[in-house]
Length: 378
Image (cartoon, rainbow, N blue to C red):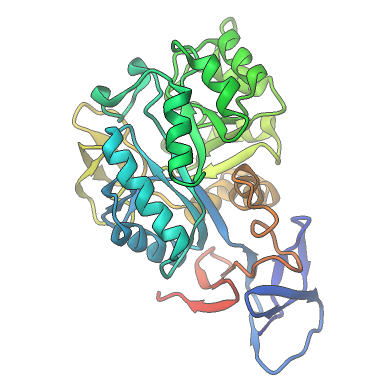
């Protein structure tokens, strides 16, 4: 299959006029004027790498913590229609038996993939967080950081956990980083930590930040807080929810400019109400009200999102973020955070042919998943 006459975001994330030849599951060649028996004319379209969502709880009525293959398969199928070709199902702060059930379901989907987006591993949001900054997480299941407990979970499920959240100021937090950062990426999240505590956590091996600005101490000119520590450390990558609701567009522009194009990671943090009509939903055992693109608990606390990566990238471009940075933040940057950048995340010869074909309004024309052309219904 040859995709012809489109503009592509090439392996350097520059816009280029080039054709893409796909052989089997992989990209075989990238060059202008390619010819072959099966050619698809995509004049006027833009081809970007498949989007990678490493923080997503659920969508279309399904949730990771349902702990079933059926829910994950439902998520995978829907995500592909939105251009997401790889994702990390994300758990909430739930009981250990519920967590184990969710991990078992994810491992099953990794070993026996359902149709749709590829399951790339688990993002464990909780339970090692601050009760004071728990947000929509259920307080009764918040636990003190215990690296031995986590190592048991990690080993029992074959190392499928790619990210684990932590409030480093909690008792045992720094010891957790010392041990866990050797085999799993540890992420700052749902924390009361101040600037100094966060800087110490980064020095000990924490390298990722979960939904920057949300559920942490913000930036103040005399108290730089957690956000100031993130801005002040070039080794750390930060997830950002870019629905325009969690973070004001002006703040998004500032954050993207300070962090630069290699440290920003777009995530949806979506819950089961994403892709569904407004109404009552659920997240982590708590009732959620979804309305007009916002998801909140009964007390008004923000409870995840109802957005998707494609819409967020479109938002960023409308907010004034360069296309190059917006696309990198939704593809190669998250791929690197889960160690998958050799297979996915950019349009490059030899990599999996995971591609999204977009029209000038950023509507999806088609998705190519592992070399398979997947038309998207309007």
